[in-house]
Length: 584
Picture 1: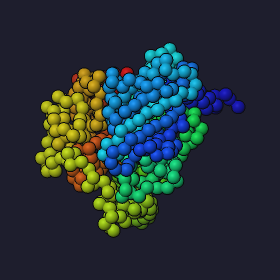
Picture 2: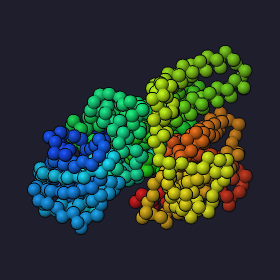
Picture 3: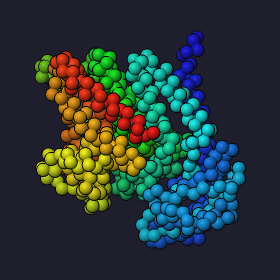
Picture 4: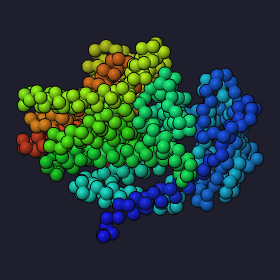
């Protein structure tokens, strides 16, 4: 038995060990207890939120565990204001510290020599105003210490080697290298991005975390009409709750970090199947490499790779299902495509797109073969899987909407609770017009302010495809350059679509791209809110986008047009370098 057979396992264990040791750079918070308005304290898990109305005083008692290589920095996110902070009985002067009442970013405080190695006592008093209140506390690491750098490099090398060896039988070497580099870049981004940064609806009351914790701690599902994210289908939350509960029990790493690591793993799976699709449908190695580099280094992918939420599982399942559709048309079984599409639909409503793709492919087959018996048999199977998954996803929402205790069959009680300032103009002009000046002038997009172009469907879609709804204040130049480069990339993708071949692969890629954009368009028309145009809802169309970009490069090469050919290659190279510039 060759040792090489165990290489992926050994590298995986090496990565896990080094990643776990990295977590000991952070101060660890344990045995958290909260008392409200002087009542007896109860043990809670952080972050903690209080949903009762009115003004309240929250008092947190917890242990701070400092390991030999831990930093002494603590981050506290209060809702609404920190009143007092004590460490080992010593009051910390809050007057010189910023963020005492910042419920979004919080306050960072270096406790210095007030901490000793081992267990320390932490006491925090928070004043809650009207509405939801709460507190979150966690340690932060110094990224520039020799210990952190050594462990980070070790973890990155182990992860890179793990991916290269694990995928050696299914991906060609250049694609394996690209996949490994993308994973390393995402891991580096994780090293300085905690779970509260650049996330969607995670820490708000009845958000993703409350959903996960309800399953993990109370072993029940939420009422979809009673929460902001409670209308979401259950598959991701079941998996996340299991991860959360396991790491809370074993205490190897923080449960929230474990959830980020779950997202990173699912993102790597998404890229893996995306690369397998490109390898299956593009014949030339050079063009495969071009398409793959666009896919793996797309900037919003790195952002989404460590966000906690059901998007990460949806991306992985969508890519796997699309790969199964490709394999089905190349002669493999139909069943994997149906199963994976159904799993995607019980992860997120966007999974309905996959059944649309399957339906379009079946209709195209019928047009070509006129085999009605085959069409009805395959369509019947697809309908059974679709209806089963649709029932799991929407049955409760439809029930509550029909009994008038819910507000909408698609998003349950969310519609009427959306802030009115997020709504945008819902007319043909704002769906057809593209504001080029604003796109180039403003590096990022914002769901709240018109100056960033949020009123225009295409501005929001294309800009959010780069950076989602987030900003990088220290990387404005990089974002501006990438925005300009992205316009050339989108033009090349359009040219590639115009020169699509009469092949099954081109047809599937074209259908995936168009159907996904159409679904997003209908979603914004139904609920005309700026953020409903966020590219994250259809993020997997990066796979057909990469495919058609390579198709454009191929077209220019075959037509012997060296200038647009070289310009496309140079634009892609500069864009990929911009991604590294953005995240390092």
